[in-house]
Length: 266
Image 1: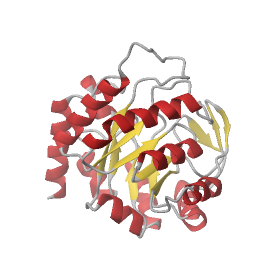
Image 2: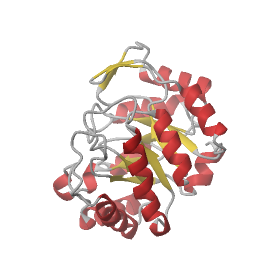
Image 3: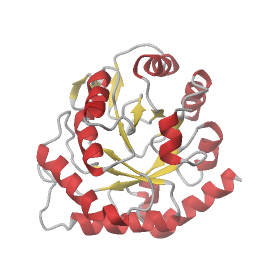
Image 4: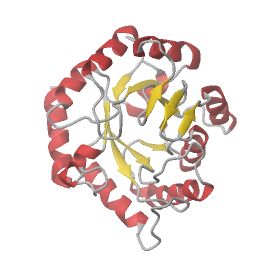
């Protein structure tokens, strides 16, 4: 298990909860009447009260997604996190969909402990042909003086199909060899859709020394099975009112989820 991963999370099988910000400036759904800070504060408070090990701020509402995030969106994400910085009591991360360089920039400037993104591979996607550059993003992080910031590599992109025909475990093993991620994430087809347990098991089998996390679709009734196979998970939609990705966090659903996590860990 990588040293950066251990240093950031300091928890056996960490569970990371999403703080989905409302649509940011520069995106079609942006509404200047929405108080983005207040909404994020309410979700953050509910997640920390529930006992999650970490939180991650994301721009899931910036649909349609882009490979190069509008600078105004990145600036607003950094502003919101800055407004909440003194209230964050757990490790936090950032993900600017689907832009590795923006994720690095916002992560560095806000003091995030980790970032998540698609860093490797080539995909046919809803946004067009997708070919990120892990080397460029990692060098950018180091050039900005944050070599301590962990990079979580999503190796099965949502909203996309890999043009690399190698089996998922082979792609995961190759990414670890060539790009040195701090963790590998396995996803379902879209946000809120579960990664197949068989995929988690197969990837973990070839990466015994690398943290492998479930990235999407973890539910209350599946989290125990997920944590039995994986080294942690990221959860968002299941914690929202009615389990709807676009709703606010439901404190009761969040608390129930972490109660199940604690039971699974025992």
